[in-house]
Length: 330
Image (cartoon, rainbow, N blue to C red):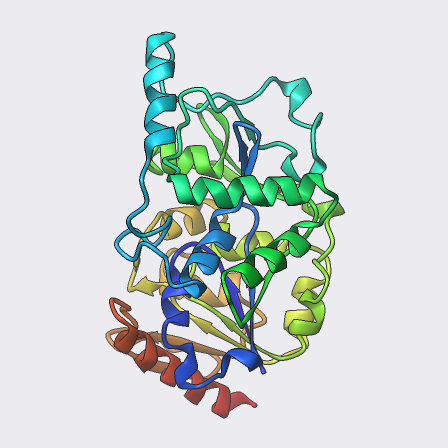
């Protein structure tokens, strides 16, 4: 049995090769929910959705988000209507007193749907409507995720990290912003002063998460701060990782991340940017998989391979390295 920790696009790309070593029946994926937002009243869970669309065979693999071939008529109509009202697509938070006035799961991350700042496809939106309605019927996020995964015919277990609200917030000189505003609307350009996982002090792991962490855990090549960090901020998850076998795959080629502002975020939280910072952000890791061009020497087993993943064949190569790392430390 193996459990992957997933966020962004890094771990999903690795999962393309997972069946080379692990069957779907023995695979669990715990997904980051710190990036989730409520947009126009719909609850959007980007990192869970990437896994759902990937497992369902409909993921847009050019972008690694959204549904392949999706149309955007509703999004375009929202944009046109906002322009006619003199409104832009700049992210608009609901008023402060509304940030905790609706469903608890969406606390601190409620955005107006006027001038929708995230591009959401029409079929993609159907998933958000379904998820939101399931939540309003009384299901938890993990219950809603399981129901949608079943509808997609997915055979691996996909678990949200928590059924409680945890929002990844970025502190900048220009003010506080949700990670989606920082990354999607601002292209990750603002200076980062600190990163906050609001709500994590009162959050619990979702049902099944701690049990899944009894198995061998693979931390995929996702952003250590904003994809994996929210999970580590939830009580019990860090302790569970410290008590099990963990292999962490580097998301870096030297000091450069595969994608996104990972090195910039690590620097902001006081960790050396790039591969050198992995022991700082993953002190519980028993082994690392890093790029073969690295010349790093860690105080624990390290497997080197070409860790760039541009195809399923690449993913299988990296999964093979993960398997060898597991064999070294089990």
